[in-house]
Image (cartoon, rainbow, N blue to C red; front, side, top):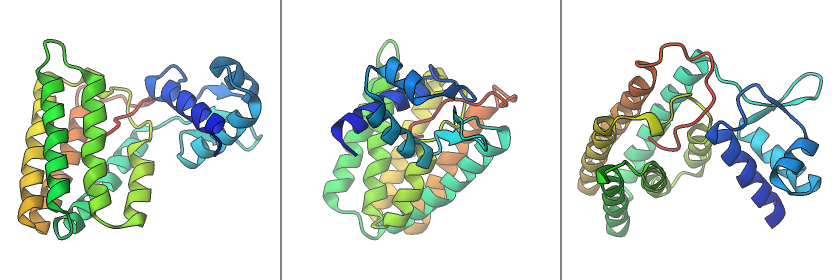
Length: 224
């Protein structure tokens, strides 16, 4: 993709993830071009990538719409993520370097700092959280797992975003990360996999329990 296409992709994706472009909403190259202030050609290329990421869909009549997620879609996404991230953690435990272990610790300290601010810095939390998971995904040394996970993690899977997490839930996520880091540092593949799967499914329950009606699912958790 060209730089203009990359920019269009980033801008449209941000609007989808923020909920500005809601699930089920029809969009066109022309409307997105006007919304983003970018010409239609890069928008067209960006839409192809967003479709591959399952953030937009094309209907039988060739209309483009923002993807809409059902309750079952949410459940399936979390279950698949638990399996794939668990496998990534299992592989990473046997391969991860001391440098990457330290990078994980730094990323998790940033998460802690974001949580401990008087008003939780959710953007900083999400950025550090994304970095944390990306580090061990890469350490797993599997392009296939990384590719599959990228699609799942970047999907708009839930209407309650991390912006609505309680501080206690965010701290539990930080604590989970600390245990995961320790298991990776010990090279304990089975424990790393077990902790990661539990971590993801805890996130699932934190998302759905306060909001049982998920028929309007539209946004994203960028990383548990």
